[in-house]
Amino acid sequence: MKRLSIITLCIITLASCGPSQKATENEQEQRWPDFLREWAADYEINDPQRVSLINLIDSVYCFFEDTTLSAESYSEQVCRMMERMAEVIENDSVFEFTLMMRATAANFWGYAMKDERFFQFDCSGEALGRIVEWQTVNTEDVELMCFTIIPVSWQAPTHFANIILVIGKDDDEPYASFVITNYEDYLMDSVRIAFLDSTNNVLDVLYEEEVYVDSTNVKGGVKTMLIPYRYLMQGLSHSFYVDVAYKTSQGWFSMRGVPRVGFDVQIKDCPRLKAALDEVLSVQIVPMDDDIKSKIGQPIKQMINRRTGEVIELDGTYYLDTVWSEELGSYILNVKQK
Image 1 (tube, rainbow, N blue to C red):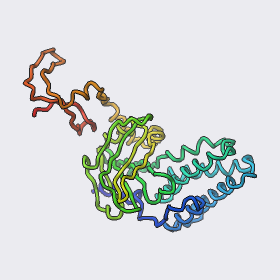
Image 2 (image 1 turned 90 degrees about the vertical axis):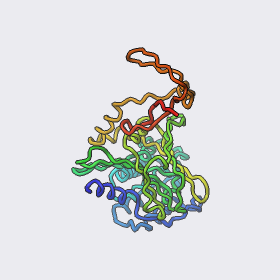
Image 3 (image 1 turned 135 degrees about the vertical axis):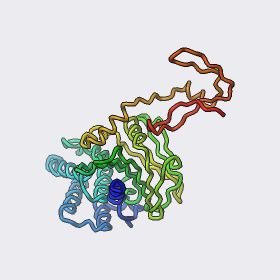
Image 4 (image 1 turned 120 degrees about the horizontal axis):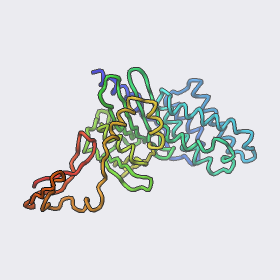
């Protein structure tokens, strides 16, 4: 029951409390800081500390809008903005505000890159890092890591996906999930999660039919996929990109994140999650090469006992196949009889 309470709390905290009514069609006609203020108003985020950060973001955008201003005069302002945004993304308790800052980091990166003055700031190299920050929580009762995948910044109020890893102090293993949100048309069919390397080669694909899906709030635009933690930790450790795609009323929608960038460093702040990761990585999963893949589904004529060298003749009704291993949290090779 205690474990269920922790899981429920994480979902409530990180899956957002409801849809923003912010439209995104007119992004080319609207300044990002104005868009951000309206987004904050939708969620009644009006406390002085958070509003002061939005004001700081506005002032930085004003600098870039005025090409006559020198970078030297605004260096402290720009770097302070990025530092405060990082603190919010990693530690703020209001999920909607962390989402706003992650979207702002993405928007600012694309916007500032067009201005050569941006590269005069000592902190310019840190801007992209804000997009790949994990949110971490480490208390006596629970350790939690959350990474939010967003599409382009203007679509972040309506489409995003949270990767969640959480473990309670009495839990034997972590709870892992993807919480996927579509507040645009509330439809998310045929969800698929792809793990890719840095050159966009697909390493693995997870389909919603393969895992338990909590659709309690699917009519409200939220779908939760509960994933074996071994599988997810293997995926996060060995991939570079994570791509989330699903069918909406307008066709396929997809978004991609790079959770691996900060994962290895930030998980050190959560020792119980780090121990679970180390346990997973202690089992080396040997990837299937093209030769093995070509033999899957083909009849096997003989098997060799690697320990004794004995050759066992088969009658051709045995086939090489892959099966899911709960113990290893991965697909492994196995011989099946048909």
